[in-house]
Image (cartoon, rainbow, N blue to C red; front, top):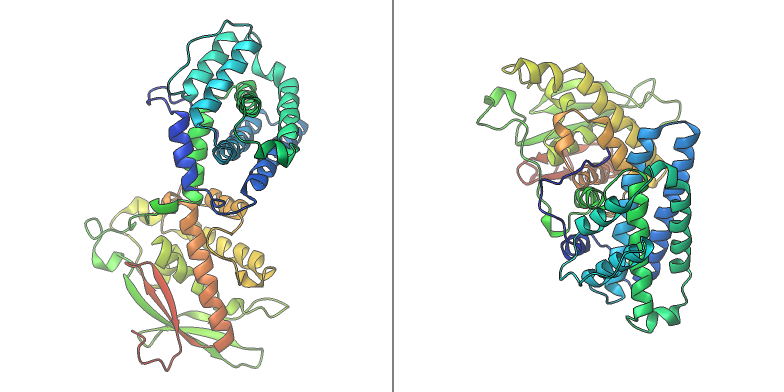
Length: 408
């Protein structure tokens, strides 16, 4: 969803944005960080051009603004992080940006601003624009792409020369092109920057990681409508004439039906309920398990109908199946660490649960649930039977053999 104007909030300064952007940086100790950031900036600009082309082909004007907000925000992130490595302060690049824009609009120089905020930049552009943004869009995106290409192809010797005025002015010019490109989509750079911070915090929170609160707190729902904060589910594989199947037991009682792979090619999907347990452990959410365990929140008819109903269960099963097919082509995510799962995958999942309570869970929380779920799934595939222990309070999912006496 494209960002909306937030003029009621205090202005977002470039130093504040730079500080928050650094929290989500994965290239802090990478000797090739500058090269990665430059290529990343160029890639986001290229992605913007490609997306605009497709949106124009399909005549989706609203989609163009939504796509532009995300692509331009990502490009801003790469630019500000590169600016830090090149040893310029955010205010230096901000003041240089204002200087470039004043020259572009043939405006006389103004006193230096101590702390530049994005609203200074937006206000300068909005007060000087004479045409509708869409009328200038093609030429402006071309100018942005040209400037991005120059930055991407700058010789290393020029970059290693230190924070020179020429390099500073080029970075300021890039920020100006980004701001003008935002205006061509009727977007404010400040809103795009805020939107980008929300996105990166959801995906790479740094030290600010905090799990979403339970969706069935004790203060609102009785015990028989709350997911158990600890749970041990036994997975037992059984032979059969038509192939193996898996049954589940909770406290010695069979839960659900026997499961097979339901596939022409065996892939152990019969163990897939471990993913629902992972959603329970790391998201505090699983309409499927609520149904199996008879824990639907019937005391609240709206929640019972919508959050715990058939549609929510279908969405959860759909997510589990879709991710499984994606993971199957990637060795069931073996070797993939936190922070490395594709952003597009997580974003798609988030869109699938829009309008439901679990949409509050940030992307990093979804990634944790997915990776930990597949970690236990791989253990089940290896041993074929075992116990999966859920600890919702401490957000843990662990595997134990059925003979492990330490299993709770």
